[in-house]
Image (tube, rainbow, N blue to C red; front, side, top):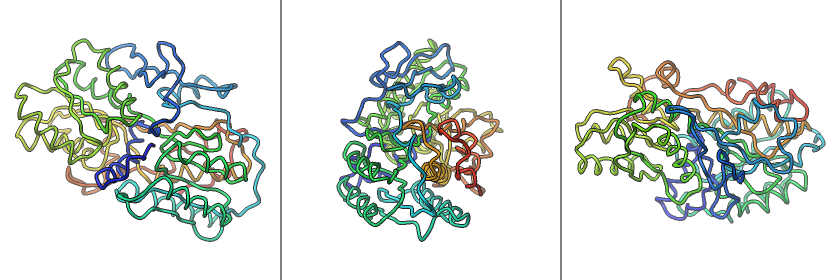
Length: 432
């Protein structure tokens, strides 16, 4: 994810919520980073092009940008996991990385934690570390370098903390990054010194970063369009414009809309990936647009605010895409199934992200050899059939927090094997 916008308190809130955007497949790249996709074909990811949906209500097919033969030997099924990947996939230098003698000392480098997602991610990483220690895979305590304040954090501060951990003797690092480009030289230097870094929710131009990214904006959005019958008046809710992933996510939505001639966009509003902002913006739009709204397509974690806006002005809540679904909006979906409410989305939680990142790092340290720089993790699509399984007990529309989900089912070793030269690394033992 790109987090170079965290210099003010409002931007600081963006940093926290942007961590959850990856559940929608909006993987941020820092401004000035390698563009998302360079394939150039009609279905490529060139300049964030969303590809083309075959028919209304289907997710578009987006060819990934494999460079330097990174897709050599990949099955068609594995390549399909990269559909929509917003950055180039390269051959990893860790494919031939020799095993480091364990147990290993592990560090965590992170932006400031001030959201339910990032708090749960840290808790999940500590739990995963404890399990790995129980198995004899790691030693000591999880080394932490977490910036204290979202309003003052900078890439330079994260680099300094990261380099301090490397000098202190960590064998590997899990990172939730504040930026992409500024961190790349430090990741390369550490990697060449034998200290691999697993980056969560971001691509990175350093070949020595192993990026682990959940993807699924298109399928969740397509489910919402199907719930609408592929027709009606819709409003598009955009996130923080200027971020590469926001542009990418918007184009994914646009590709789905373009495949449905009976969908009409009656307005586009900005929610800045913040529920409070989204609520205010949608309220203002609804007051000035009294016509019927049949659906809202938002590109990440703003469904709660959109729903609250419709309620506030006393208008029926239409299908709202729950891409990057959270406890509150999922609760609304579940509680209104009996009323005929239907939509779609995608959901995962911070704990799941933490455990899959730790699996990848343990496999790398053991010499199992990640083949490529970027590993996509499929995210569950939310539908009316399964929404109840994601809702925490007692959750309401106003609840904050993550959806339910076991780390055992999210990026398990059986899935990760296809991305490693040697299967069944120690990450296979990392289950609850």
